[in-house]
Length: 452
Image (cartoon, rainbow, N blue to C red; front, side, top):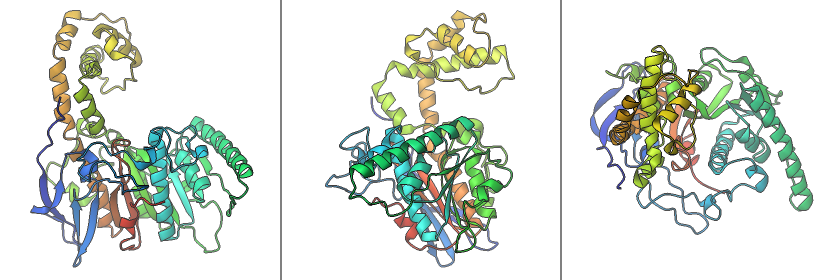
């Protein structure tokens, strides 16, 4: 089965004028959206000066890893030539060759790739902007914070709202410190030049509608005077990414930002989108829940599932049937989250519905109309086709959300770029929004390079 054909390119030119003039939207060949390989295609956004008018260009280059260690990267920037396995996983698909064993422990390959790539970008950005402290917001178990603090020597504060995740992060910090000490004893020729500082963990929920004082507090007084903070978030969920943008915009002590967003369906409406005046002025800019939720699916992974045409695709039909039962039992219960039900393809449709009802807090013994459920199951192929067509819009929707955030910062005079930092096959949310309050020239483009 062939992969779904790409949507036709959408071309237009978006000019963002400084001062009071509104941006223009006019037919041209400058801002291009290609959906051939999702984020690997439209991934990078260049902001280039043209007189006093910055020009936004999308679709010119995607995530592509330079040739390293004698290996040619599979595929080009447009995703042709097969999947692009990052060079760090060519020797062992489960272990990044760019991380030492202590930093790989308890970390899956996807997360290894993400923390290394984003951590190294944050280190470069911190050096460029003279930051004294990195704040990792929504830090979870602290994998990124640990790598930045104990692997790259940065001063890091980690903010996470879940007490259990923070406690686990602290245990992992101590485990890593012990492993690094043992490694030094085994290899005395390796000298640790700088003192190690574990991440400083804080249990705190960040309200996206208000400034968080804890987020802005420095860890220690510096000789240079005022603290200079860099905010980062790896797949900060929903409004948390928006909160990072607002803190960067409003707080003079925050001088740099590196944010990777996620969970667009959890954005507040209004409040989370749109942020920019330009997008708010577009006719039909609204993005309902269904479109934002669809933008969170991995097009690359789903294309593989379609090619295999396995029984796992049945999940879409079963979930749709479950929704009809939920709506009939409790009409006010909209879009309930259904935790993963294992081995769906081995279940009868009525068994799936019963388990699903239990997961959303309803009586699993509700009387079911088996004839209606079987009629739903007969529509399985049509449901998959509908889902596939809807999924083709995902890159366009995500592009609009990320462009809105980029423009929000540029409208305020900040310097911002969207860079494709991760391999889209490993990490579908692979664009990082980088922003500074000082011009860095070509430094922003240098940030994405893959070096040692």
